[in-house]
Image 1 (tube, rainbow, N blue to C red):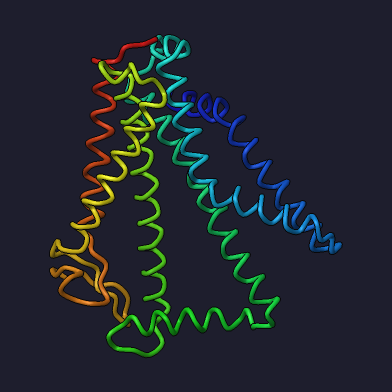
Image 2: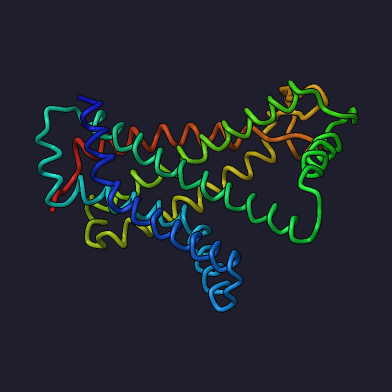
Length: 274
């Protein structure tokens, strides 16, 4: 049943997301053609629209996921969703997988675009693209206490840690979206409608970011960046340099799990369908 739910949610949300990606692609195509054929008036228009579109892609994706989650569960469609022979946690898991996937794609497009723009700018300035890798190695080397060129294993560990951090970041956003939109459909918040869900999301996001940042800096548990890779250190970022605090990340994981459980509980017990 979970597989059918995921397929249904992908199809249901694909229309909006594909339109967004199509607009981004058209902006990119216009920009590329304007530079290829040196069409000056299109360079500014295409470049501006493409940069704005891509930079706002994660935000647009988040809003689309908010709207889809709210519409598919707490509007007229919600009656159909709750009559399906599936548990509320399966419905929630399906939407979480789909939302995570769309956000991950948007993040990848954003990162790829930023890297592409930087490399293009360097190429226009006559700088060697191959030197970027050496600069990256120098940066990682400067961050280590031992200095020297970091090993392949060390680089792999740093990349793996970055991917895990990205995974958790997207997971937290999905949890915040689901909790906020669900809470906005519970009395007395349901009087505010969809806009109320956005306000709750912004408030929850800001609070979690502030608290997790403080915990990340001052909680005595960190990853120490060394020439051999990453090592666990029971000291805070405030005490030792070349470290990445794990306290904030752990707190975000705990809060995300809590928000998913709270969302599931509210879906089962407290929801007021319109």
